[in-house]
Image (cartoon, rainbow, N blue to C red):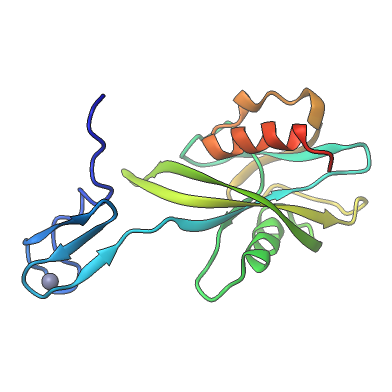
Length: 177
Ligand SMILES: [Zn+2]
């Protein structure tokens, strides 16, 4: 098996002083031999919204952009600094669908990894069951090309482009939500 590269192998220079003596410290950090700066690489928090209508259909998006452009996805996105994950999932669903979430209940988390800008971004994807007004109109916006409600039981997880969402859909199908 090929040895896994250090997650910061592409970062050659100390981001603080610019020294090129920026070396592996442990499996998730590098340190600068000149100024002593230590940089830890931790996953970013991201949110995923699970929205059902009264027919037990789940709101599914088609990804408008890379990575995994054109594959199925669930609405959601990164948590901003100084924002709760609940606020983030509500904000992202509003941005991507126009829907107002009245309640967001945490379900579970799954680690994810995807290429963005030639860099492997590590995330902790937090899944939330989100309540919306089932009569509200919605429209695909932002990172989403198309939105539709699909029956949960018929959904094939392999149609989803991101690893964590594939696993999340399979998990949700086994839960009684
Ligand atoms: Zn330095």
